[in-house]
Length: 300
Figure (cartoon, rainbow, N blue to C red):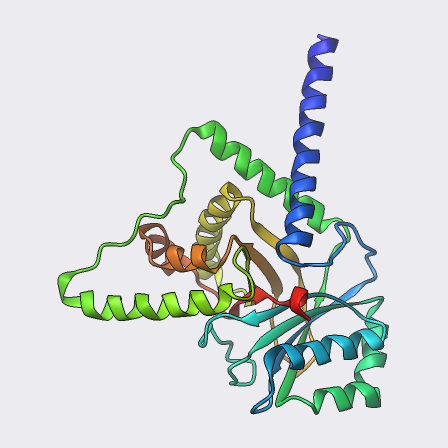
């Protein structure tokens, strides 16, 4: 009996250790995300949307912002180029076509408050058409808990014997819409090619979420459950989740959720699949921004 228990414990330790290792490799080598798995509960995260000035080059502009906030003591943990020209927009944010998002980590909330009123930061913001930020407060062990949750989902899927979601089955297109859908697919192919030049293996979606009423929450929970099950199969999923904290315009978001997918091609195939079109109607929130990005921190 004791031997059996030891074997089971060793197996669990091995599986969890493998999950942590794989996630660390994904985070550092694919997403180019610098967040430590475990961090102080005092750290304060800021997610900043950037709108470049006309003629400003993307990598030069984002690189300048990254360098600027790091000079003030912040640690930039993720930077991404917006991959699609018209993501889901929040009605609480400025109505701009954002071009990049940067996630910064400050030692404390007070450190951010000091930095944001400095002349250096004001000058840095003036180099862009607009910089708009939302705070994110995270529990220290949340990354670890999310990893265990996604591992549980993956193990449950394997044991269930259910067919894998990927490769996706394309949605059937009525003959009268074939020309329209063909044009949409050609546009998606162009977007995929453009963004794969920056990163082929990762797509990271920035979500600012305001939860809706009870009916919306129930529908969104079912949608989220299907999406997490799908992502667990391919070793991706949430990488940052935290309570949203208003920093500008007195906005009212409940949560920031930053989720990884295995590349923009995967995402493009997903949105054209029977799987996704069957569940998309369940994505119901009171308000949200959903911006797909490709990692660019490795190019800065």
